[in-house]
Amino acid sequence: MRNATIDIACKNCFTDFDAVACVRSGALGILALITCVMCVFRICRLHWVQHQHVHQYLIFYFAGAECLLCAVNWFLGGFYPQFDFAANYLKFLEFVVICHFHWILAAKILQKESIVDYLIKPVVGIYMLYFTTVVGVGMYDVANSWTQCMKPYWIMLSSGDCLIIQLFFAAGYFITVKINATSCSENVKRTQKRDLWSLIAVFEFSALIPCVYDITVVVLGDEDIGCSGIFGHKQFVYSPIIFLFMLIKFLIPVWTLLAVFKPTPTLAFDDTAFFLGFSATSSLQSYYPPINYDVPFPVTTSPPAAMRSSSIMGNDHTATSYARSASSACFLVAETAAMRKELQNHSDEDLKSLGDPDDRYQELSGVF
Image 1 (cartoon, one colour):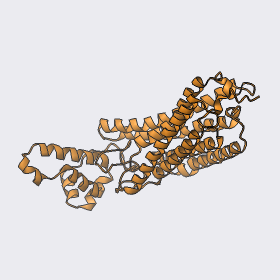
Image 2 (tube, one colour):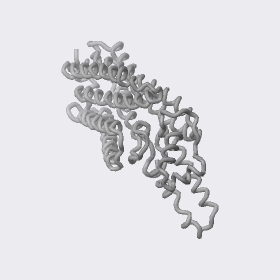
Image 3 (spheres, helix red, strand yellow):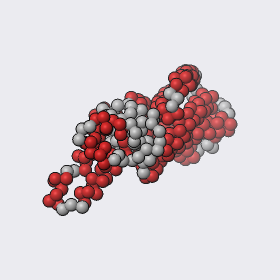
Image 4 (cartoon, one colour):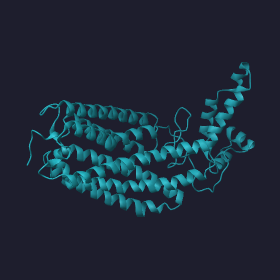
């Protein structure tokens, strides 16, 4: 039976004040609001550079809406389960978009693009129906804070997250195999794999921890002691755990997305491989290089001198042939580095005649 006096889950800054609970919910709300603003800026940046892939737009639209819902919920004290369900659903949509994109890429690597239509899309469709149903029923069947945490819907959602993220893990494996097969420098490949697997690890962790938490709550709790009794009715125990739990579940994955996915201008690379690609500042901001997956490996990292010269002079046929047989990412980075080294070997009076390496990079980007 509920005892509102000792129910630590309903404490907040307004209706049932508790200083520790107020600090926890306020800190979470501020972090969520800041993250939401960062997502909005990222969306504006994507539109500004005319980023060519819809996946990244969808990811940050969903992430921004998720953070906004979390901020409102936490500022209000966190006792509106409907907000939690809605935020969970938006997080699931982020999973779906990320898995869909990476499986498009993995299917190209396997040269079995029909996998996306005949396997991935049906699986994602089933998961969409499952999550929509669970979230809808959960939002309708809401209990008070004394027993809400023990509802079965939370386990159903968190276990579903754990399963669908394995699709991302499998796609990451095939992408890593392809990265290892390229002839880019080890530093570039190491950076790409680090970004890819850091993203996978964070999402795996953010799916596993809620699942463990929800199972533990159901095992330890009952209607007599309520959710509050699991934590001994002590706010200083409950608040730090919930604070870390919410960070891991909602905010850290979004921070990782903001760190890994970079807004990039539209260039003439392969439509799928250029999801992250090059940034406007001539640096490689991708965890995989733009590659044509129809050509065999290994490939060379720089073309012969005659080919390089003819491509710069405007021989479109030669440039196209090279673009289809080499890693454009490695070539552009290598060309820029070579130009910088060339500049260092000349006097200051010769610098103007040699040109700027960043201009050379832009010229080469136009070729590819």
